[in-house]
Length: 336
Image (cartoon, rainbow, N blue to C red; front, side, top):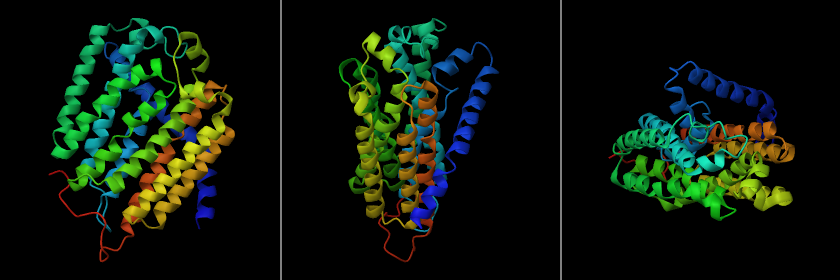
């Protein structure tokens, strides 16, 4: 069944890509009709490019869904809170990044029109926006249990370090992985009231490997400019050997997901979703054109569907679990 399902899902990639690009265009149009004074702030927070928010949000949803008791849906309140938090924290992360990188961004073709790099907003205005986003994020975080709050504060360390990493290491994508996937640790903890390393750590590690794949694809867009301005990335580190590196990280991602599912007692829909994700990654790596910015952006954005596959597989797999069997997830209060 897995061998039949994965090709069917992979065959839909082209239509899915068009749908994703329409979503991005819709977000950009929404920003373009906002009041003119507000538009630079929305662009600074990347409200016109929601794919980053989705990629931050999906590991949160996986973790929350894995914590759902057998035969039940994930906690909708937590999904909403983490969705709001993902939007706010992704925006905050972009502001921090652009404050650190505004001088570099002026030298890179793709980023020179960003509000801070172009001078459309001042650094003071950027800091003011950052303060508002972080304050709002704190309001979301304080609605969760103490263990999750502690994890939330810990997540700020890689958030702050990421923009600096590209100056000192060819592995800033690994630091981004540590940052972007903290929701894999926080979601399960928020839903169950305790941190479970047997479920959360394999999920977190696998999601980091996923980030190394999709953000290397993203970094392909800037590799020529990065050489000129002295910015480092895995796209430059891997060079012409990118395919075995990214194939290895893809394999680790899929293996980590499978291990998480086994520990969590998942059923066949989850493993079908993992197989579909494997097919999607194989398609990306076989078709990507590293020297085409448009193609790299399309392949990068298509990772949204991997997030959707896995979340859907967890939800369906949990619903098929028999409540009469011993549930590996303790049935505790979701946020207290």
